[in-house]
Image (cartoon, rainbow, N blue to C red; front, side, top):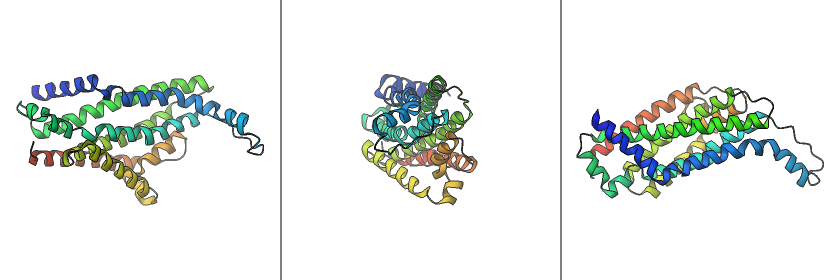
Length: 253
């Protein structure tokens, strides 16, 4: 266990000392701070600058659910894109630099190498999401008279399952594909295919491709059934990490 703890500490230090500490946190904080004011004042801005062009169309008064929906949309699009790009070289970068060889001379197996990297980075994203959701909730409460948090937290937790799934996917892709850009491109391709597949209702209802849709529905207070997408996504994440460990054990360093 000491070898695992040392390696986990190395992963934490790597996050704290590299650009990963700033990019994804900066994106989430930006959306958390700006999303609720945009939801609150966008109708007034549109009415002031484009009211005549819209033929006197009156937009409905914004509510706290508009701010939550903005947060969910930003998570499922820009934040997820950034996550995929950031983790494109999760394993391949260490193989190229020789760090992986050095680590594996210690009492850390190749399987543990994969599992620890996945767990530490999933925990990192979880902390970021917790902080971002708290900031969003606080900003929303400042913009609207009432802002109960149940819809926001339910949506964020469902998105976290999706984020963990993509961290697991990028772990596998970074083992299989030696280029960080290539792995990121493959990850974005999977995202696009999953978005297209979610159009088919049975897949959206019972498989991981429905997670983004369910997160958005929960944020808007609409009826949602995230159980099966969450369960199947967690199972898929475990399978992806297991496959990454198997492939990494057989790979040349």
